[in-house]
Length: 412
Image (cartoon, rainbow, N blue to C red; front, side, top):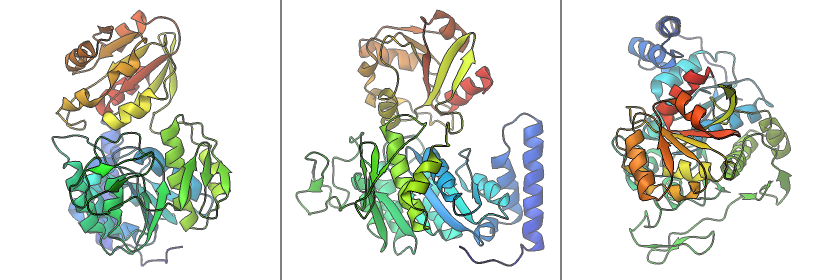
């Protein structure tokens, strides 16, 4: 358990109060949760507030291109077996949103924090985490995020010599490169379905060899480390070789991988795998993801997919044809305005599904589906798509702001 800290200074208390007031005004105006504007106001008044709020906590940071919101939620649920937790559970993962979350955790023991990839090193410097979980790196938001190898290099530099325990995915060469500068790493075999960002060696630039689940560079010898924790089918294998069953309400292999990393994190704080995994079963949905809702007399399952790796995982868990599928893509600031990533997604996996397309960039998506040889209909809005869809539960897959638009429309 983290040690107690001195009470917040008058300036810090003022910053917290002002931030909460700004957030309340934002909520009252219907502008969202207010966590970001509240954090911005608080940090303006006290630029060091994030570090002050984290002083009394055992902080766990979670960063990745995919899975960080869900993994953050699973870790938080597991650690509640050991003590009270504060977390940015709704995914506001830049410094302002993190500050808002921690401002509500004065009585917490653990701070489980999702961090945007660009901000990981800075947030780690400010919060002195006990554990940092690194899940994967893949192409995303090409207009605002660094190329993946550059991002791995920044993580490697930022985490060099960190005193935190790094819980890292041994199956992603970019994650291994980023984590290898740290003296205390726990390797997890969580898998890597999307491999197209990891064919060149991050150490020397040579071509990676990828036989089966293994990988190595034939030129410099950089290779997959031996994992301590392993996802094996529906089980987590712990460092002692014991197998623990994974029972989740969240679908798909990717969430079993997230649970494996989460169990490894919880174990650092003395929570046994059996207890951690049992608690994870309580998680039914994460910020609306995987929710099944009723709309216009139909059942819709809401799924979020923000980049090629995420779309690949999502395709693996939807119901088979002839289940109708609605796809919605925007390209607003929070999504990244570059939609070239659509061409990296293998949409042929949707063959046989009735497909309905909407969103701000529905015509970009329509061109991509046309080239893939798929049948689809372009719709003006969700209502039209649902009314045209054949019977059965509808799978709705959307990127970030499109997902939020859909949640508002269905009242979720």
